[in-house]
Image (cartoon, rainbow, N blue to C red; front, side):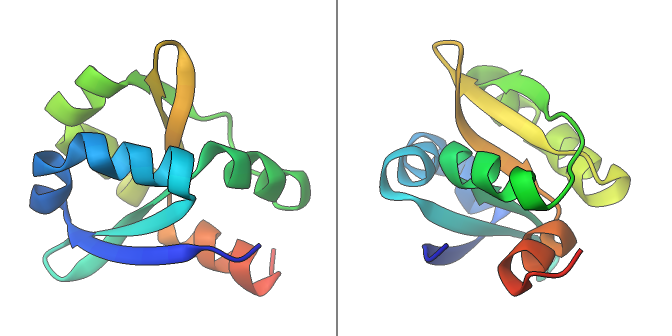
Length: 113
């Protein structure tokens, strides 16, 4: 599963929310999100996520509308970073991107469980 990758602080993500979701959904970009110079979550494309879940168990993602996800980005990132949650960001009722914990993302990329 090859992909492009970027790294952005959460403040940058909030400012460029629409383009970050479009990058994930249409350009298949994985975006590492940082807080305090540490990766707290990875934003991945929904198609990549569904494929990854076949071989790597994951909880059912919490669903957030694009608007709520942007407005409550701190809560979304807290749930992913501290509780290991997966969070689907939806546009028009369909997943546009999924936030996953960095450890889960790394395990998928390296083929570990």
